[in-house]
Amino acid sequence: MNKTDNLDSLIHIDAYVDFLQGIYAIRESLIQQMHDVPSDRIQQISGRILQCDDILSMGGYDKIVSRRGNV
Image 1 (cartoon, rainbow, N blue to C red):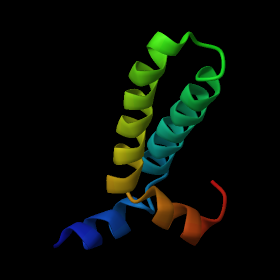
Image 2: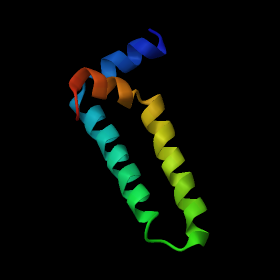
Image 3: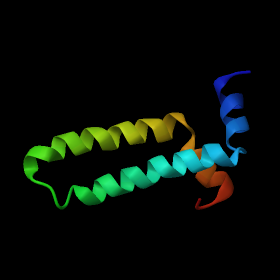
Image 4: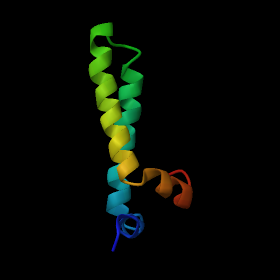
């Protein structure tokens, strides 16, 4: 079983989708926070956003959205 097969299997598990939705929500919250923080914290928040992006990318979130619609 390769990585693509593993992701295809996980996409159908509601708990996995919920986990990725949580990461997505955190990412969106961090983006909103960037508007209200001092400039010295922007780099820190940007790093956290990139971490969320990496998790979503590796986790196949884009596939989930394309297969299930807006989740």
